[in-house]
Image 1 (cartoon, one colour):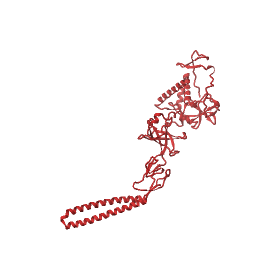
Image 2 (cartoon, rainbow, N blue to C red):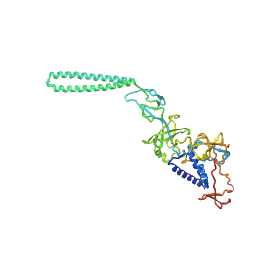
Image 3 (cartoon, helix red, strand yellow):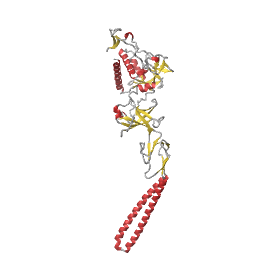
Image 4 (cartoon, one colour):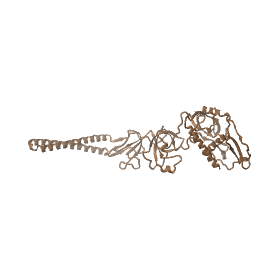
Length: 483
């Protein structure tokens, strides 16, 4: 029976939240706190029926159902202590964190440059190893100069040979011209031979020009036999030129990752990829300490090819069977600042909750703040291990999420308690929550008494075994006290 009631309460609150989100999606959701107080003062004299009280009970019940640590219930050694919670957790998780997808990612360089060997040249000496930091202009490797010098000598010999052949051809042409003059009957035959020799000379001259270009290139290669780094960065791979791509994802001889700017390469399941878009603001979070965050923007979503053999992807909440069997794709995030980010670091990426510029502090649910309709709102805060009423200054109010902008009074590093009638100033505080025990709860004489609320706002009751019977419904009203 209790489980069914709790389920009904959860469904009711979720329906209220959905209708609230819908109504708040249009127009300006953030109002000045003074305007909110004015609206509340106009309704001060209105009676509060049991229906309203019941609504508050519903909210409290559902908060306990989803976040049992929010409402302190006495039990064990902590029965005389006030349970306090981190403001940071309440501000970032209770309201905005639920249901947020997180995607696993790794820090990569903004730019990667490949350096390859020139074909026809033999590798000489390698000056770097994987993991070395290099600056632009630092030596990476050299070519075998001796083999290039031998090739240069061969080119010179080829040119000399072609020049010799040209000289011979010209000499033969001179003889044929003399023979043709001496024997006019053979003019046609001599002309054909002379034309053939002139064609050979043109071919020899063409070969000389080709060889000269190769000579110039070889001279330059000898003068620049040492290949230098085009960028500043870290050597990622040095492949064997005879067996490239051995244990590496690149076929380049040497691959260098640029220093300075980083990218976050993350994976997204095809079922969630439609929720991302280029230019989308995101929050980048450390997997070691989730309180360490950076902001960034999605700058690329690569749908050209699915990720191969990837175990990452959807992070928060795990993956269903359909997600595990579906394809994943890479998307890339540019962090707004690379301070504190380490190359190769594993992070998570999640869509950012855009905070309007009108919010000067941080957002906190109204149910943690007392007397919000007065000029002296406060929270129950931990001050040196004791519970105190700490006055806070409020900024704007979001009527869609029921949040206030807390401008001053407390910070994200403070701890506060959920308002409860049992709280008193001076109580000791604890951050250790103890699950309550329901076995020894004493309901007294009214154990079987059940209260119901009629549509006209009156309360009535019925007893099953022993308790008072309220035969006539009684209207219950009260006014909201000042402060």
